[in-house]
Image (cartoon, helix red, strand yellow):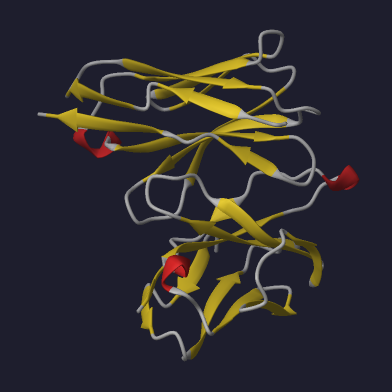
Length: 110
Length: 116
């Protein structure tokens, strides 16, 4: 069964600090892995997308890594801002269907 | 135009009502999707349209009826819904790739549906 597991479930950080979110997957076949940011009550917005051959991808203060051998990915947020408060979802594409992680809820406090 | 729009933003309906959700994109994408998302849960795929034809129905109850009138529009017709159908309904689109795999899906803002 294709699964995507994210950790931690939630975290609270102070503005300006860094944090790292984890994603482990068992999706097969593997096409690509994406990180989405979803604000409460809004649709997910793509942050990064990585294929099998890519091991790091940056988008501003967001940096994603991928280890296709161990089937692990991480999303690092640098110098967090209040606007980073959201749910971050790891999504793995195998075939026609996306496998979604449950998300990590990040709360940034002043 | 690089966004997916959805209307209405919010919808409250009774169990005997008939309503429709609308989704529109002008990015030239030929794959469009409906997802249902409950609070604090990941989106669940409902339907996939590829080149205006229904290609995937994830065993969704018949009270949900999708329609793709053209390559830019996707509707979801609702009839005789239950309170447990209350959720955020997300539309997404993507340019389909060969072999059935999908490119990045662009999500709309969603319609918050409440069934009384």
